[in-house]
Length: 130
Length: 508
Image 1 (tube, each protein chain N blue to C red):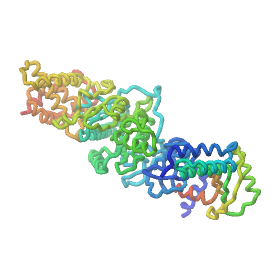
Image 2 (image 1 turned 180 degrees about the horizontal axis):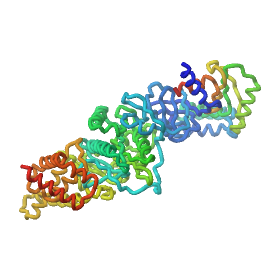
Image 3 (image 1 turned 90 degrees about the vertical axis):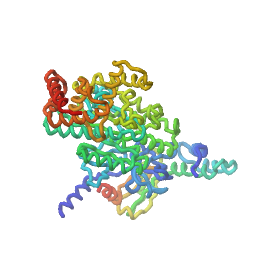
Image 4 (image 1 turned 90 degrees about the horizontal axis):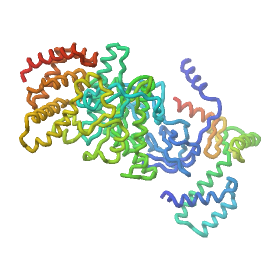
C-alpha cells in the first residue's frame, strides 16, 4: 500500500532533521530512529521506508560510485573525487566497483547523475541509433 | 562490403568522444500507464524520459520525492527498480510532406505498413502558439463543399470552427466531406498550374475512436483520392490514454510545419470530448486534484493551448482547425462543450431532431455561427447567399405559427413555402461535396425563383437534375464562375440563359 501524504510529510520532516549542512549525520539519524521507537507514528513501516529512501538518496549525492572494467588505482580515484567535488561544490567520496561488463572505460554515478565513458555504454548508444 | 564498413565508421565518428552524462531514476511503481520514478533530479516538466526497451514517457508530475511519468508505448515489460533516463529533449514528431498519404500513431510512427516515414525535420509536440503580432486576419475561404455551411456559416483559413452535436448526427461526415472537397480543389488547382494557387493539406486526428471507424474513414478518403493530401494521426480507443492525450498536439505540430513553411493546412480533431476524458484519466492516476465532473483544473488550458496554435500568419501560411465535440442529449451548456465554444471562432451545431427528420446535414442554422463571417467568403457566394440566412430565420419563426393550423395570408404562405424549399435545397448526401461554382448556380436559381413552381417534396430531385444539367451541358459557365469568383452582368445573363434552358427541359 503506498504511503499516505501524512506519512510522506513526516518522513520528509524527519529527513530534514537528520541533516547537518546538507550532509546526513549518523548521530541525528540514530536520534530520529530512537524517537520513532518511543513514539511510533501511524503507518510506521511506510514512514521508515520513505525516510530510508530519502537518506539513501542524500548519501548517494555525496558518494561517487566508480565502476571500472580494468585496474584503477587510488590516484585516479582521488582525481575523480576532486574533480567531482569541484563540479558539485560539495565533498564527494569515491568507491570503486569492478564491472567487467563495461569492457573498458568508466561509469561514474553521483546521486542521480551518471557519467559513462565505457565501451559498453557507447555500444549501447550505437545500438539505439541503429 | 567496404561501403558497409564505411557507414559503420561514419556512425562511430559521429558519436561524441566525450563523456555521456545522463540523469537517472528508478521506477518505484508502474500502474495504469503511469510510472512513479525516484530520482530524476534534473528532469524538467514535459521532458521526454527513456524507459528500458522502446518505451518513452513524459514527466508530467514533478513532486518533492518522486516524478510521475506517463508512458507512451507498451509498459508491460517495465518493473520496479528499472532505470529511467532523462533525454534532455521535448517529445517531438516527424513533420513534412513525406507524411502525406500516411497513417501514423501519436508519436508519428507509421502504422499503415507502407514502410518508414522519410522525415527530415522534427517538431516538438508542445509549442507556444504564435503571438499577436505574427498573425494576420482571416480572409481566404475553406470550402467544405457543403452548401449549408459554405453559404451561411463560412469558414476561413486560419479559423477555428467547432463542430458540435450528439452522437451520429454527421459530425465526422462534415469533416470528411471537407477533406475530400479540398483534395478535389487541390487537384484542379495544381493541374491548372496557376502560380497563385495555394493547396490546402489536411490532417485528421482520430482520438479514442474504434479502429473500424478509422479504417472506414481511411477507405472513404482513399476512394475519393483524398489520402494523397492527407495525414491521418490515429490514437484509437485501444491505445493508452497517454497516446490519446498526445495525439492532437502531434497533429498540430505536423500542421504547424505547413503553416511555417508558407503553406495552408486544415486539421480535424475527432473528437476533443474523448481527448478530455483521456486527460482526465491521466490526471486522476497522477493524483492531481479534480474539479467539476472530475476533470482536472487545467482542462480548459488543455484545449485552449491546442486550438490557439491554429492561426493565419503574416507572410507565411495558415492552419485551420475543425475540432469536434460530442454532446450528450444535446446539452451544449455542459462543461467541455462550453469550454471549447468559448475558445473557437464559431460553431456548427448539428441537431438530432433535424437528422431524424431527414434534414442532412443536420445543421441548426439558428444556433450555428461563424465569427469570421463573410470576410472569408468568396464574393460569388456573398452575392447569391447573402439573404438566405435571414430568410431561413423568418421561416423558422413562421413555421411555429403554422403548426397551429390557423389561416395564413398569402405573404406568410409564400415565405413558408420559400423556407421549405431552401431547407430541401440544403439537403446533401454524405461524401458528395459540391464545387462552389455549382453551389452558387443552384443558389442563384433559388434566389431568382426558378424553384418556385416545383413542389417542395420534389425540390431535391429538381436540384439534382439542375446540377447534372449544368455539369454536363454548361461546364464552361461553371468554369467561368469558378475563375471569376464573382457575378457580373455577363455571368448573370449566362446563368439566366442556362436556367431558362433547364426550366424548359425539366419536366418536373
